[in-house]
Image (cartoon, rainbow, N blue to C red; front, side):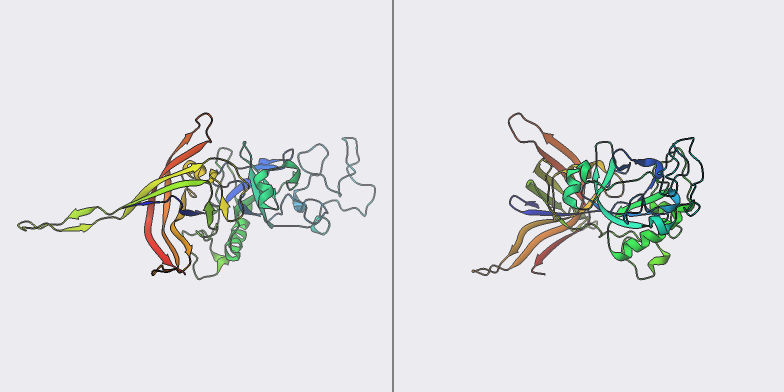
Amino acid sequence: MAVLGHGGRLRLKREVPEPIVLRSDDLYVASNSIFMRNPAFWSGDQITLSCINGLPIDVSGGGPDCPDGYGTYCGGDWFIGSNRDHIVTDASNFYDANNAVQFYMRQEESGITTSITYYIYRDQLDRISFYSTRAAALKGATAERTTLYKVDFNTLSVSSAGTTEYENAIAVCSIDIGTYAFSDVQDKATLISICDFASDFEEPVNFEYSTAYVTLVDVNKWVVQAQLTEWALNLTAPEVDITAVGEKFGDSVKSLVTGGGTMDFLIDRLATGENEADSTVLLNLLLLTEKGCKARAEFYMIVSRPEGAAGVLPGDLFYETELLVTSVAVNTRATEIIAGSLNFVTVGEIALRMGTN
């Protein structure tokens, strides 16, 4: 059975990527950005930064909110705070002439922020920067970026913003990062590989989040796929012959219900709203091979139709399933708009939903 989607609607919910751990050496002060190798985080994503030592940002106005990460000597890599600002050259006195000045930076002066939520922009060199609004993050303007300071925060975790329980679990597990030793040749670590209480649960479970790290699959919100011109969903349920020897007439049962299809779309970068996504989402899904490569999809044939005459029933009619993008083709013919098409396969349950609720 083929379900054609011209004039229909497609809603997608991405699979939540694993939280990733970044190091102090990944921070670039000149561009106010941090290098991230994991491709599952995209521009416009709302994320949470967590670090038990404090973050390399200034929320209170007293300096970076990471009191133990300040520098002590002139010419070093780390930020010099108000406690050591008398050291300007190698000839400067190591101690301040004023004995009332603190030698070490304290929380009382700098403040400390261990968790904060931002929107991210990912540049062409895989560096992420942070913004207070999604619109600003999609544009990536350098003047609107959150200022980052070169302080030794050791490691911090980047995770998708989600429910309170999810973020509490991230905060608990981020404490374990402090004792984790990175190897010089190791790829970026995921938080689940570090947390002492990591688990494999795919859904929220009913126990204290202070004793387990839980991967929630419903953190990212539903978005309407913009710039889509047409989609087709093909569903099959092949038969299996179970005719017994000696029977005169054949008998069969259905085997697996599977599906696949195509999507045609226009390619452009647009400043979409919170509930929409441009076609770069579809292009990115093909490039992911690990956690985050799947998307839950709703293929709408009827959208919020009111009750009508001649027995027309109100509500929606759509298929719901998960999909994997398997191939993408891009058309760049002269004088025509750049367009793309992709093939996908369904994974897991395929459900037909209908009605008003």
